[in-house]
Image (tube, rainbow, N blue to C red; front, top):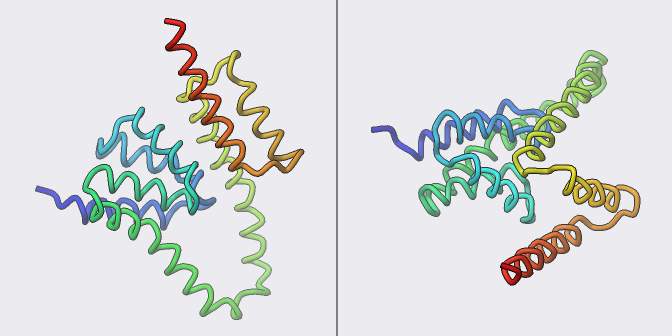
Length: 181
């Protein structure tokens, strides 16, 4: 029988090591491993865990790995998944800090990073559209993310206020819909 702690650590270590662009770029890779390959959670649970991870302070990738690990094996599972996610970044940043002065002015390295930036935008855009589809965004609800994005971008509204307002509005909608029926 496979050892969950080792499997989850290895899975999240791979995700943390080979994903550029931060937490949101990790979503399709996490889904492929956690939902499709290992079947640790189903797609609906995964979408719920993403919503909770986004709502919590801290790094998205650590949050979602912690929630998945905790859901499956409690505190030890959360530690295993979180450590697997965080360790690659820690090691890479440590190595960069040690050797940065050797390549900080290298034109090849600077050109590589200029090439990586547009790809990272795509890595973030694809999961955003997939999340919208899975969240059942349609012509009646598309205004919610659009208005939220505009409030954050144009008016510099703190995203925490958007999350709180969306949660309150969702609760009120559910409350009044239950009373109606």
